Image (cartoon, rainbow over all chains, first blue to last red; front, side, top):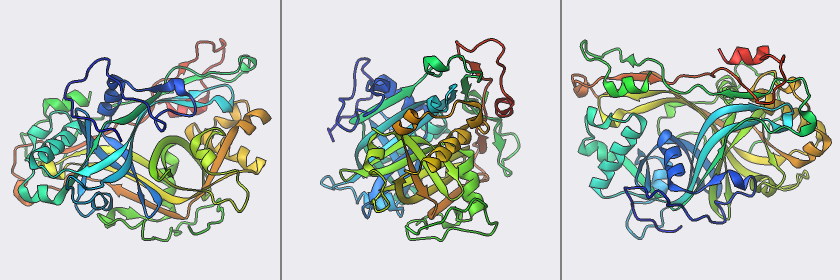
Length: 234
Length: 234
């Protein structure tokens, strides 16, 4: 995997270099490599599907992630299998080969023909080597990014991790080097000979957002819903 | 992988047998193996993340799926890489080792401590060997299941695949044998010493559903939104 330095600011014209495994064999016109598209898809989500190989077989697990510049972070218990597999994180550690995928479904595409049914989506696939973060400052920054990725503004409105909690949490870093986005937008693409068929055709858009926050049973009276949550649940 | 025969009817008490790789190392109490839980999670979704190994490295791609009894189906162009990798489908074909994961996020769990932040989710992880479907009848049934999985009732209200389209579509079958579900529900689990902290705590539920259907630009006048779509978009 190409090494990428952390770049906190996105250069507008910057793009990831396509490789054999980031150029799709099909629908290549749906692929994108520019930082802006990739970052916007990554920043809209918070659950990724992390793939790795264990005993020669693929494993895909859902997990939270955060982004800091050109680095993605995932975390877990130090006892969890993927994090144990990534080793203890010395600089010469081989790390863990991973594929991290983030997908947003935007709508269902109903064509007149069964064959042309599709889904409008935006996805990012990151190939690379995940490595344990050992620097305590980077680890804290990564965990803050994970919390703020899910609910922007939340990290500063919660008790920071204690030394014991930090020690119990493993953080993996994955540099954004070998990356591609794939997008489908728009309506159905029916065959010309199907246009007169009597089937309804169009797109069913997914509803996005949140319902009203549900306070915990033991929330003390007088603690209202904070503004950063109201901004999400509207 | 244990071989499983197709069972169109779910036996209430039936469960998948746990294996080394379907018993989680952490939070084992969140795991479930009963058919009812697994099927309900699978049937609520339509996009899975399919993992396989290519040149020794993991690959995770989002794709649609359908379920017929104890079989899952995914499809794609006959030219796509995972489907080519699964071979041409004779009975003695080795198939493609895959991990198919389906995840629903139900809510964001905001604890008083950053450490105890979490997500309410339901996921299913299927390990197994995917094999090409060569029987034309099973292939048609699988493609109908894929369309009806996304929009129940849609398969019969669209033009069925032609012989040419069927030939251009590869379908992979994955038997439900080595399967587990994992679920988190409920509110935050804060430490007793954090209960007096002044942070709002609770759950932010995700909004589920669809917005109003958007007709295609070339939809003929007089073709209204069918009932099975109205039932989804409410």
